[in-house]
Image (cartoon, rainbow, N blue to C red; front, side, top):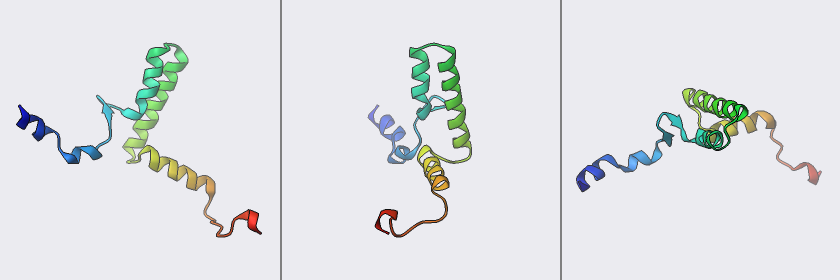
Length: 87
């Protein structure tokens, strides 16, 4: 029995994204919110988050990578070396 557990759990599996069956684990909180507070708007929020995370995953992005892209989009291409308050 121990050999079977050791063979199925390997250190390489630690880098895989967490999933709840086929749903990304990042969408688990909105799904939990829907299950706790069953309303139409929570269902819409949970489905929209699951679709958003599915689209990110399909394009090969994680949440942290997406947030970095979003930050660089809003920050712009010009990076100032001297802070504005020291001028």
